[in-house]
Image (cartoon, rainbow, N blue to C red; front, top):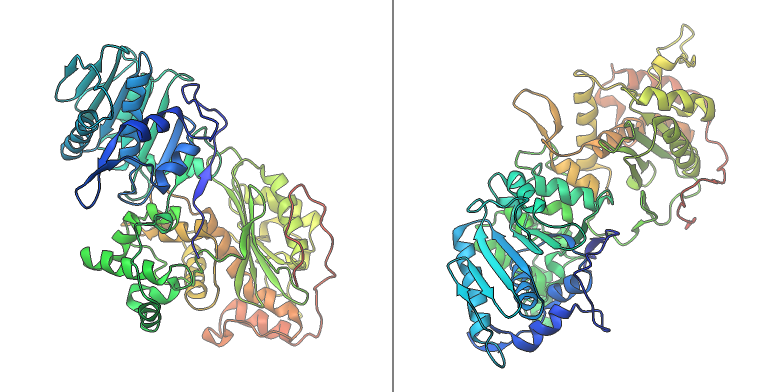
Length: 559
C-alpha cells in the first residue's frame, strides 16, 4: 500500500506557465516532440516524461518546492523545460544553479546532447561557452553554473530559475536571496529542488512552511514508492519466500504492509550499496516528508511504536487529523495541549490518546489561533472524545487557555497539581496557578521520560508530523532537551501532556480498566498515592457524551 504524495498548492500561478488542453505545459509538448535521452541500455530514444516529471508538469505553479527521492529526473525535467522555453519563447533568461562543479558539468553535457540530437533543424546558437548558451532568433539564453560562482542581483533579470540540490549549497540562503531579487514577481518561474540534508536549514524551513499551508510556494513531495523503477520483478514463489524471511534489523516487518515484495527487494539492494545505513537511506529515499529532513543529532526517541501510512489515520480538515472509528462508547481518552501565541511562529497543538485501545486518535495543529480561543477547541475536542481528561502545558500563554477552560470544562477532568487535603482527598480548589502541567528544567525530563516509555512500549502513533518532531528531539551539549535548531517540538510537548494524564484518566473508568502503567514502578510517587486513594472510591466522573457544534468538522462515529 503506497502512501500518497504530498502536494500543498499556492494560490498564485506564474503568468509564464501556459497549458495545453490535456493539462500539460507547452514546454512539455516541445520536450517530447524534439528531445532525446540515453536510456540505461545506452540507446538514444525519444524523451518521454516519467511518472514524477508528468505529475510535476501537471501541477507546476511557478513557485515550486520539490523535496524528493534521488534520481527521479527532476533536475533533468527543468533542464529540458528551460531549453524548450529558450527555443520557443522570446527574451527568456533561464538560470540553473547546481550545488557543485561536477553536477554542473553533467547538466552542461546533457543540454549539449539535447541540442545535438534534436529532431529537425538544429537551432541557431550565437554563443556556447562553458556556462552560457545564447539563441539569437529568440533573443534567449540559458546559464548553468555552480552555487556561488557568479553573483546575481537586482541588475540582472531571470525569467526561469532552477536551484538544484539547494539543501547542499554552502551559504544557501545568502545566494538564494540574490537570485530571487533578479526574478520579477508574476513574470518568472522558480523551482527549488533537493533531496534532504538534515533539519534546521533554509530548505527544510521553506518546505515545512509550505507543508503547513503557510507559504506562497507549492510543495511537491515525491516518495520513492511512487517511482516504478524502484521495484524488482519477482515471481509469485519468490515474493512468498521474501515475505516469509523478513529481516527485523532492516525494519522490514513494519514495512511489509506498505511496500510490495518487489520494493522490499529493491530496498535491500539499495541498502547494501550504502552499507545498511538506514538513516542515510531514509534521507535519500524517503517515504514521508519528515524522512527527508532527519535530525543531524541523536534523537532521544530511539524506539517508537509508529504505524506509518495507516489508512484509518485521515485528514479531516486543514488543522485536524484523526483516526477512524473513534470516539468509541466506553473508551476513555486523554488530551494534551501545547499553547502558542498565535502569531505564526510556534504552533498550538492538541494530541488525543485513547487510553483503552492505547493509540493516538487525533491531532490538531494551528499557528494562528489566540490562546483564549484555543481553549474552545480544546473543550470541543475534549467533549467529543467522551469528556477526555485534559492536560494543558501551563507555561506562558497556557495560563490564558487554562483560565478560560476553568469556566467551561469540568474541573475534575482538568489536570491540576493540587496537593492532598487533610482528609485524604485531593484539594481541587479552582486555583489558576495549580492548573495544568508546568514544564521546568526539573519537570521536563520527567515528562519526556514518561513519553519515551509509553511510545516505546505502549502507545501507537500515526501522525508523520509527530514522528518527525520526535526524530529531531535531542539532548544538546548544554544538557537541554528540546528540538534541534530550526525544528519544532510543539507536538512532542502536547503528546507528553496527553501521556502525563493517562494514569489520571484511567482512574475514571471505575475499575473497568487497569492503568497501562504499573504504579508499583514508583510506590512513593504522588501519582501512586493519588491512584491508591482514588481507586478506593466507587465513583465515576465520566459524563454522557455531548454533541459538538464547533467551527471544525470532526469524524463521524464509527463504533
